Length: 273
Image (cartoon, rainbow, N blue to C red; front, side, top):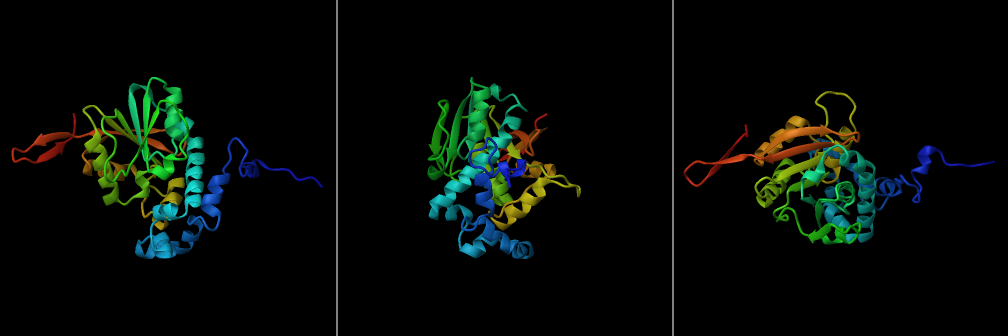
């Protein structure tokens, strides 16, 4: 009798080129937090409250801080996912027009490194928490900066990249984050959000499954194009363009709305022509 891996089981090998081993461990293994939280999905749907917090008494990010090994597995899993989607994102847009790209909440830097490899004239800033950056990929043109994006993000970059970050948060939390990004921008800076934009219709979308995961664990949500436009407008951004990629991710490009002084020391924003 002979046993051999199928194309599907090859993905579970840790030494394979397209390994999903860390992702499966993070999502489907006991003790990592995510698997246990799925049991409370029904209650989350009924109440809108995070199943994860109800189970552990604190949020997933605190869980990773208290359980460093689980945090390492999660960071590795996210790196695995981004390794699969990064080439599609990198080759769907001319990132080389930006001299400095700040990847805010960029994890271990898989997407940023891939962009800089393809566009070596650019430099990168990888901004995340200390325990995440400890696992970051070594890459010469990338500066690592530790911080909390709800407090402040690095100033003066030409492009701010949010890769799979916005969907972790409620509208009010996402608005607070986007406001910090806008405050850090210099004239001419732009914003690129990488997310799965879900369709308004009933057709299948992987993002609809992710929407349930976001509800049960971090308390965030997936969004339609209209919902992204409204969220960005609330943070004084204009959604300029949505670029589809071969991966499930879309690139949502935005720029700050024009500020208009009302003469009373307050500012309103208007759409650019």
